[in-house]
Length: 404
Image (cartoon, rainbow, N blue to C red; front, side, top):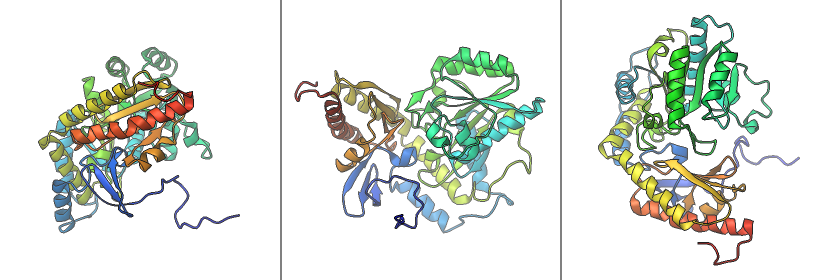
């Protein structure tokens, strides 16, 4: 048996590159190559790389205080919580370190709510295509069998349904009176940039209110301005009871948050939940600086404009190509779905100087930083469109020159 020469656990199929520094929407590898960042650390680097406001704020905070403990008061926590409450229309926040932890907390809130209703075994509705994390509870809520494999038995208490089917929700609520929450991503990220439809969210909000069921909207990937609004569900003008956040909230500094409203806001009591690192001063400063920059620099409007440029540019360049299913998304959360698995395109794009990835086997995922410039949006199209065209020509044996 050949031993793994790395001291790292073999948990990632890494691409052959490492980065040394970045500026805006660009990163440089350790061997000096320059890449356009179309992924932003999987929707994490909201402000791109080396953003002057963020880096100055973090440097100052590191020189003041990095961590104390939640045993004591943390004024920056209060400031960020008030900011998130104001932006969301919700009321209370719990801070943690990641999207997984935020989703775990949401699951606990759902179960606590179920027990307050007298349910001995509360259930949560989740959806086909969902991804909520890799802990035992969140991988059980996740739909992908590859995530489950090798970690059975799964955590019980999840009822899985098709997305955007309000009839299936009504039927499940009738069949399972112990359902305590409906848990979904406003836009599925790992599931292939698949949005919950506006009418579905609106009907779901009314139904959850009617049945005393928590509406929990996972905004871990699609929140913090990425779609052109602070939170993707705001396109539907609904208010969730629970909203997990992470990724883009700290622009690269690990942070998670669970924002709650109504009954859900008062379910946790001292001793019910906690964290050692969550909500420390450094992470809170990152969150405050990120939100301030997004607002003051008009980055949500920028996300809308740049996203439209990318989608329209790809649609024009790939018009009439056999094997192209759909170009979809909102703001700078974009998916290009092909008919055939296309995971090899991530490596091809890397060779061409562009960072992307492929999710759900067939969906090219673009998540550029919100500071992306118009000329950089066009560069993404100029690099990516020929790669997709070449891939589709190879799969479908299209004669050279036939494609639009």
